[in-house]
Amino acid sequence: MNLLMPWADPDDRVYSSPTSLLVKMRLGEAPDHAPALLDVHDCCHDPAHHLDRGPIDRILSRYAGAVRAARLHCAACSQYHRGHRHHGYDDVEQMTGVARTFFIKVPRGAPIARICDRLRQIAAVEAVTPNYVTAQSMDVEPGLERPRATNDATAWHPRNMVGAAEALEHEPGDPGILIGVIDSGLAQGHPELAGRVREGGFDTVKLHSTDVAPGVHLLGDYTENDPHPVDDFVGHGMGCAGIIAALGLDMPPGLAGQCRVLPMRALGAAKLPDKVLPVGLGALSDLDLAITLAVNLGAKVLNLSFGTSDAALAPNSPRPHEDTIRYAVARGCVIVVASGNSGREERFWPAAYPEVITVGAVDATGQPAAFSTRGDHVTLSAPGARILTTSLGSYQYATGTSFAAPFVAGAAALLVSRAARMSRPLDGRQVRDILIRSCQPFPGGAPHSGAGAGILDAAAALTTLDEMIVHSPGEMGGQHVH
Image 1 (cartoon, rainbow, N blue to C red):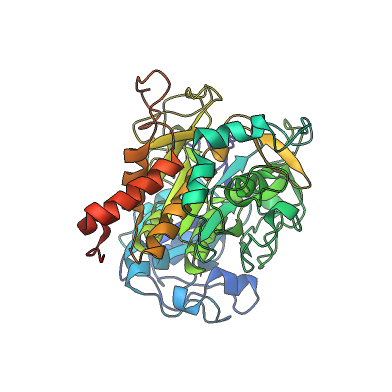
Image 2 (cartoon, rainbow, N blue to C red; image 1 turned 135 degrees about the horizontal axis):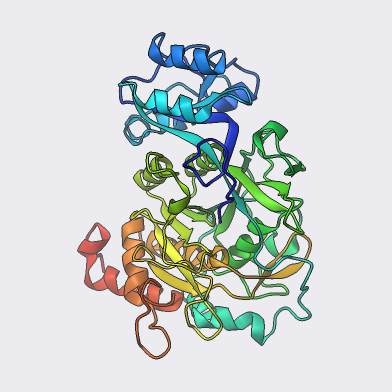
């Protein structure tokens, strides 16, 4: 799930942009004048040319020639106010750190590792990180194995494994519930997603040829931030979206029923020297910005099928996505994350954060898939091998924990829909607890270390929710009214 090409630091084994880094100021130290990055991209403001008029500015001037900084995230209350998106950060944005995170632009060749090291020694700086870049590819490449049949027993098998038909009969889903798919974007006009995609997603991809290593060729739209999260090359986001939201025309319907997808394109397209087909390429800044924008646009569930291995990071580097995960949780989102495809026991970020629901993959027999990343942080498993789903222009078989996570995201959306229908609040912790309680055991009944509590059972999860509302109203934040 991560692209291993050293750049910024000899101790890092994960690629990072050679032209940017991220700096988080301590509470009370962030300057008010610095504009939001989207306003800089929209040419509403120039980047800030100073931050503290002190040691931070001196370090950046010495090693980068000048200060060019902007706030990475918009204030939620000012997101639609072009030119003023850095005004009005609230307590949640301040406490989680999203209001205090700055995108720093440097010339190619600037010693990013040295800059990070020097900035970490400044009292006003809470954290500094290179702008890591993650790569996502289809584990079964689209076009190489086009399905001969679609809506058949093979296609239905993984859906039957999680009780999809029974779950959708129990709860059809609420069109007002949005699932933010932070991924490579969606193809336009696929009939399976007609009416199931919320207009007003966003494309946060902002890459330049100077941001990638020699031999990596960027494709399509990779420089413009805009409300058009269109994928023309990769298909990873389409694979996730079909599992969540397909109408069921020539494939089984999406598990989220009438809930809608909010597409957020944070992975651009690139051709790598060792890959036949394009991959999704996303900078940490683009992914984090997409997460906060999705939350501010109303997503209740987030599907995050990407990650960076903990082993690939230097010991003194902050773990990716921590602040944006905390922000999404504080805003009441349910966060579903793929565990990874390393086949080993290890931690990927954001999958390892305790606030998220981390999903491993099982194969067609219900056994943990050989490729699925394992660990005590994995919450549960779902089907992730040869899943029939949508592609850029048709259908595809997709394999990986990237495509197990959308089953759980769909089930989470149904739980949120059901609770809303009964006027009950439901947060991520409660959804996680319900999914764990209602899991099916792995075949044979024996637990599998590092594969979570069992296999997703969406129908049983809805039944468990109903029982909680009737019999344990205190767990749902209120009193049950007969």
